Length: 156
Image 1 (cartoon, rainbow, N blue to C red):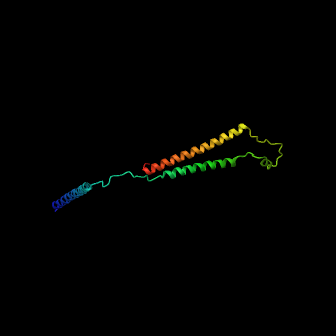
Image 2: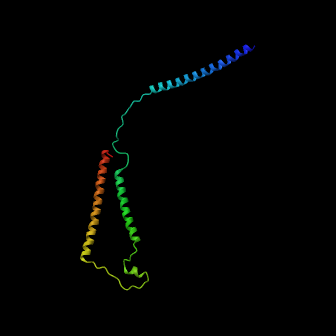
Image 3: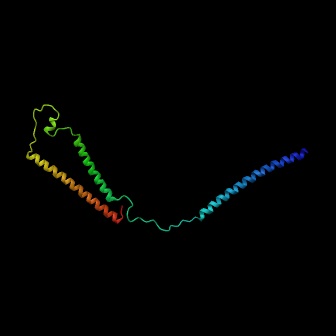
């Protein structure tokens, strides 16, 4: 009996080792089949370009004429806002009546006398403001025409 028992134990041990080796081989074969199937599938995929990419005739965004106009309006609005803010923050007195509102005694006032040099300076300042406004309109018109031409041609 002991000899048969030893043979049974040896057979069980050999069976366990063989079963373990068999399971490892089966898992390797499955992994190899999966890898082979993946390679086969990638070989079957073919890419064909049906239509080559094309550059659009007109740019999608931004609409440059509207953008240029908005920038002009924003600049003019900022200029007007700055002028209003400066006039609100000015703490000087422009007239004798404003000074009398303080309730303090007033000894005298200095009047403004417009001399020839002051008038010429005021005329030059007005001419400078008008020239600046004219240049602003000219630059805006040029940018608007360029953006319209580029927009119609399709160049961004």
